[in-house]
Length: 153
Image (cartoon, rainbow, N blue to C red):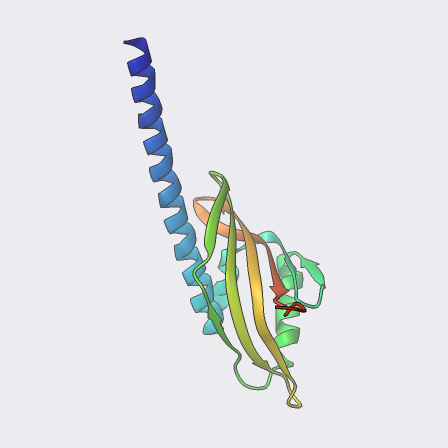
């Protein structure tokens, strides 16, 4: 009888944890959609999705931390653009690290034209570490890794 009770409680708590993780992932995906929608519209609300101490690693290897620095880097980059960049992206794979921390991985293809006609962008793997703060998910670290064709592939 004791074994049955322990087994039943184990199944119950596993089910509760699974439902909670599913709910967390749904909230994270909602945040993902929100930040991309704001970004594509150049809506300043995109910054609401970042933690104040957020950091980013860019495809050129540069590393920047803090919202003021990230915004300044964004403004500098925006000043180099000719036209509006376009992106296509997949829904991210979400891996819960703990109940308030998750890792997102998605594929992003960008088409970006710089003033003077230079074309940049292409395929990248985008990773983001997100943390739940004050009942909302915030990006605390993100990175874009260019996808390079390897010899023999």
